[in-house]
Length: 137
Image (cartoon, rainbow, N blue to C red; front, side, top):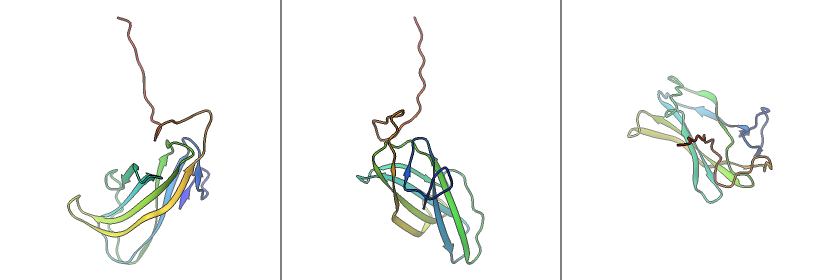
């Protein structure tokens, strides 16, 4: 499910709002390298953002037997408004990029949209902060 900054489930988010992708996972076997992956795609299927717990250095530790987990992956909303987005979610047992076991894969785990913000128009796929400097020579 998608959670807004207020802690409640939502399907539409404002500019720079903290968005949380919450997954409820039941593990039925021993796992020593759990890795969760979220991909945000636009309405055309183009991958806009991607993260895995492994690449960000987040470790779950060894999980023994039947265990219920609630896993949050959060990000700041920098996406273009008035668009629909989908979340692709994968749960792996990942020892390395070359050695992983896909445990579950949900192609369209959820969908959401971004609210327009007249104060912060975004004309491209995402907004990203830039810095500027100049010198008079």
